[in-house]
Length: 320
Image (cartoon, rainbow, N blue to C red):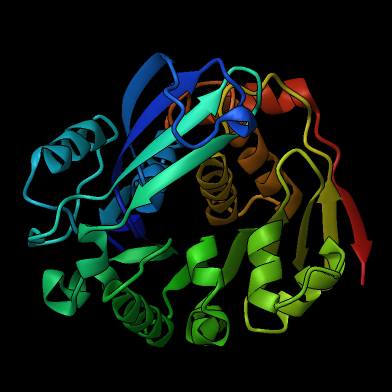
């Protein structure tokens, strides 16, 4: 009997959001730029996913290595609000991961400066496999450095124990190409964006449909490719799903991918039809991008149902 629903493996960060009025593309070397507002929130793949899953009603834990510093305390305190515990037993001598996200009021995108510190130090002695075995699902986000080997070992263990795994690689990991094969073979679900898919496959000429089929051939049962405000494509059981996300006022795009992926996984775990799982992921992402912070505003199940009814996202299905 599983003790909880999902173990989220990856990074946890402190994100500092800076908003400027000047367009990002106009900034030159040596410029001094006035910041109009700033906010601090926790972030990172494991942290964001665990919070989103918990908000939607699942029991989630995270496995991430933190430093012995104020940023670690900040993250753990914020995660308590979501009833999420970190299962890592030790601190790293390195500082906790952090990022600075700079966005402009003139542009609906951002520049992110990322420091990978403690999360790259996750080793086998930092957790017990019994804790991994206690989960119904593994949500595998990005781990780099020494932690990448740990990620592969967890994926291998999950495959042996018939624990289902969702793999959500970042661009950092996508660049590893063939080195990701063990994770792809172990994955039940693969979710990534168009750029990550192109890098992983080593091509920029495929349409989303062809990329989804190519990624499916590498092992995952379900493949989902997002493309920001453009079409989302998914492939499973010889059916191609696609839809156009509704247009909303975008405040910030950070955390949208994590919100989408977590919402989609909730739908899969609750055995929704795949098109409804896609809708749940999309409305969660739509909510997040209308606020600053990767967890503002994650939806509850009731809120998600209301938004789904409001947006009426039409998902197309084509047999392949």
